[in-house]
Image (cartoon, rainbow, N blue to C red; front, side, top):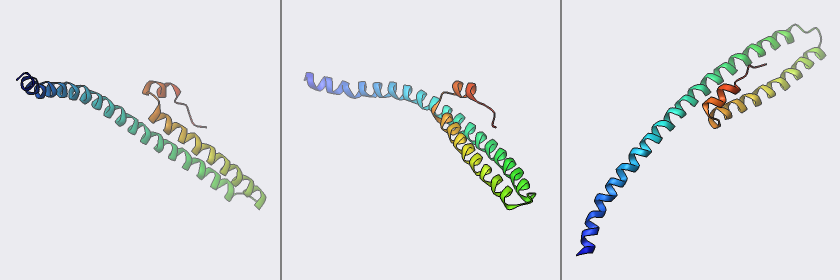
Length: 115
């Protein structure tokens, strides 16, 4: 008889424990979703700024190459552009990874201008 009483009380206790856990996890989910949305918006903003900056640089280099008087100067500019482009993309990947891996306050302090 005692076993039946305790087993009858277990579902009620389980439901109460579930409700408490769900409330705690619901708050954690809300905070997590808010952080994820902020990071996603920051990531999109970062990518748009990066692309605008890269397009500006690429346009400048294209104009410089078009105005070169000889092939060697054009190849030198293109080689410099390629190296700078690789560095810029590597820097951008570092920034994007930081957005998703560092707390918001740390990202705000570390934000720096592009070269």
